[in-house]
Figure 1 (cartoon, rainbow, N blue to C red):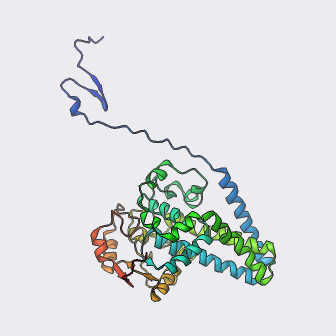
Figure 2 (figure 1 turned 30 degrees about the vertical axis):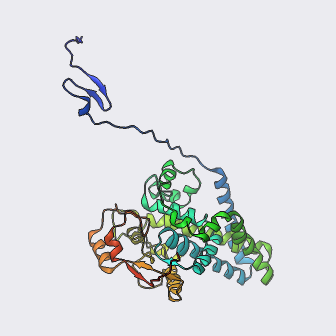
Figure 3 (figure 1 turned 60 degrees about the horizontal axis):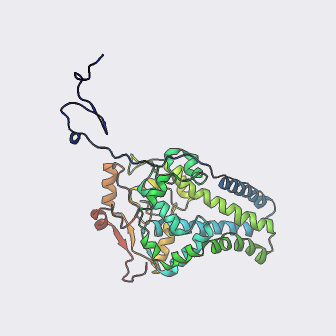
Length: 358
């Protein structure tokens, strides 16, 4: 039995115990902040909706092969291109990353295309994407690829958001988009504009202009086109974060995936994009074979509607390739507080304009 008078003086402390001769000041103090415990909760309403949409898309493929007019299928393809551009050139490269600027005429076109795509209001899409870049492959990443292919592809939409996603999202500066009247208009009237642009008009146009049946008009250019566009966008979050080579930074998940680039209008060069998220091309390629979005932006730059196109100097790309990076420099786009002055000075800005249009 130990005599209390003989035992060393032991006192509890934040890190364990204090022994005789130690002071409380000598001990590192931990501040325990209770974090909200994350419990995986399935949103069954979303499961039902997306399941129904995918079944409807399969039915749309059947109708396209058996009874639809060729013009209806062509119309669906055109809508896929337009809605895809609304995401890639609009929500992604323009609004999420500010990799170029656009006159109001081009922003209006892009907001219409973006509304047809129905992937949330552009400002909300851009906020989630900025969070994704700032906290890639962590609990704060809305579609964290480290949770597996299914989660990063569609599962993240079938579960309640991780608390870290909400918390970190509050710290993302969105003032640049809140000041854009076109963005504000879409946000305010989104649930009036979206059903009309995504579902109603694409159904009525084939029926009115070339006497297509309702089933064909609804399930091909609406349901199938919508689901197909969704999956092409999701592949950037899943396949392009898990499969491919990493010539610019081998320490991060995003990869160069040619298949995704082909299907997602140029968004599959993802290792490059996460290293240089402010490059309007999202790739180092000098042609348009797998980057339709870049061709779209360049066309409007030539007519003056797109300007201040930002890209990366070859020497900077070469230096990064040789260095391979450490994966710590993730910025959401041009002007982020973590962007180095060196990057800003060496960026190539083309089609500059003196106007103050965004």
